[in-house]
Image (cartoon, rainbow, N blue to C red):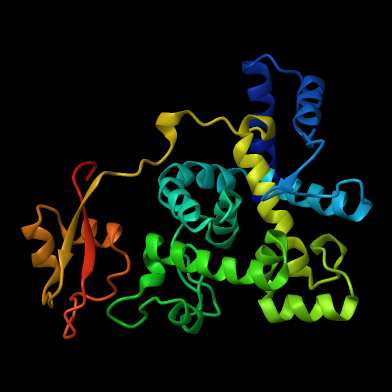
Length: 297
């Protein structure tokens, strides 16, 4: 018996053994698998209170696609649900402060999975800002400090962008689409196609899927059990309590600074990823706020 056949035989033996051990026949297993493939589909959906016209065939199909894809990205979606417990308490009050609908927290979900991601194009952070756009929205971006990695500041910058986009495009749904396709890009298609509803526009594949991905993650994360995700509160990732330390001068050695605050360099960087170097150069004596966790480290 060659090595490939041996592996096939072993795999088959393990599979059969599992059925015997747990008292599940092959036919029953097929039935269970068939049952698990059934996908709950909501009778209605909305984004920021703006209805999704599910009665339109292509709209329903595009929404169904994103529900199926994301509900079956088991590990990825499960991790996002766990991370939300840590990220949403930071994002939600900032959205509320600026009058931006709470549904936009799910835009951050699809942009980055709620981590400080780095795109091949150079976008960074939970909200995935490019350097120039970040600076336009008031964030500091350099080799020492990159506020795209600061969840509070980047959420504020995202709010400013979305408010501007809503004012120029007329709806929150189009504002969300513009986060991917650009305000001018979406506006150009509105002018050319002579329609003003996202669901009526023919857009690039990425932008055409974009809002549906947001709404699908909203649906799954608000009703996780309906899509096969059961997460106990203690399994989610906690938002650790911190104390805020204000600094307005240069810190030559962040490792020594961390030790002086009762933590180590690793913990300092985990809680302040916007600190990009081993030091904080601050000739202008700008005020920075550094988070120091008080437990959980």
